[in-house]
Length: 128
Figure (tube, rainbow, N blue to C red):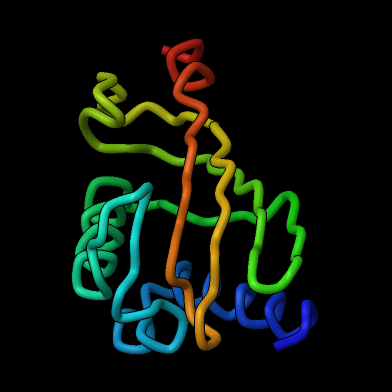
């Protein structure tokens, strides 16, 4: 897989998330997926995303920066959204917040195997 192929796959993955196209998530996420060091598998990954969209109905993944170096992707995602209750332990409760996520992905066999994510919680705290 070339860097261009990997970028195209990642763009498809983000479109899958934004469209909440869960039945096609398996095309982008490996059965043995890990998130921040924990093995959650494809089913756990889907459950995590479904929960995120349930708690944040207007969730939208906006790529601000993308670097591809096969088999890795580094991305800075921007969010402008309205979590309905507590988010990251913060009482957001329906207020609009903006924050970023810096995330690294490792791909295996054309699908995401490892994800390392850091969300800018301080940016949310500053808005509350």
